[in-house]
Image (cartoon, rainbow, N blue to C red; front, top):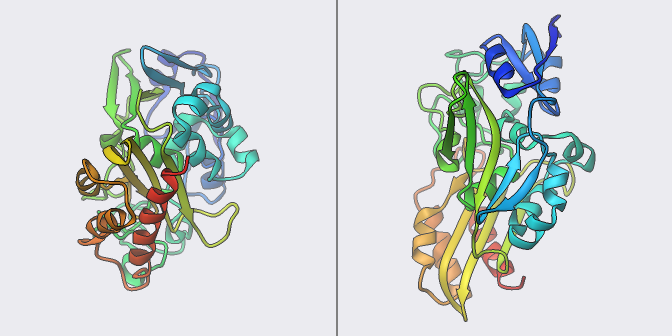
Length: 325
């Protein structure tokens, strides 16, 4: 770990003023400290933003407001979340360990880096770690890699469970820039695909900071599921995960939401499958058709072909589980 200076920011304005390419924010530190230990992140100045950011969570004007410094545990156990947005709670509790959830901040969860093994192995080329050095995973293939939205620049996947639920529920990321101007970024536009800049994980402007997450009121609090398939039950990242929500009128689907983790560089929405499900009866056959529609154009790498049938099964199972809440 390289030497660094440590400073505190006591306000959002002070934090955005101090932010730069060589200065990094630290909140819970559950990902950044690991990156610093491995010399992947090498900030000249580490800025503690915990005094500057909101630790409040509230429900008002038909939307949930999650302050940037609210811990993952506090979100998962909040009464309003459990009553009106239980999919969020279920997704958070599927991830990490209690100790990490107690420390990890909500905004920090959105900004965590990939767990691709080549990203963490500093002896190998990685475009995310060192721009334009190459992608070892794409050349060698790996079972943990993407099956959607990737290119030869990067095949890494986004690691968050929380973000999959936020994607499914059409959340918004609220940011403030150095001119104290607030912006709202739809969650579907916050994280990015590799494109020509795989070292950039998201579309957060360099002079901006996340202040809160907004989640609009929804009708998925009764019929929902979060299914996470992984190598071991605890402390493992998803091979495939599925967040499902159904808004039902009797047994007819008025609205459906489907999102996945472990399949792309960003939390992935299955829009075609959602559209297919609208107006259909909530039956096993319909769920199977939706799953096949979701996976029909996916192109797995040489070591992760198994993710396609796994994903199909996970979508069907998550939709079935959502009927029984």
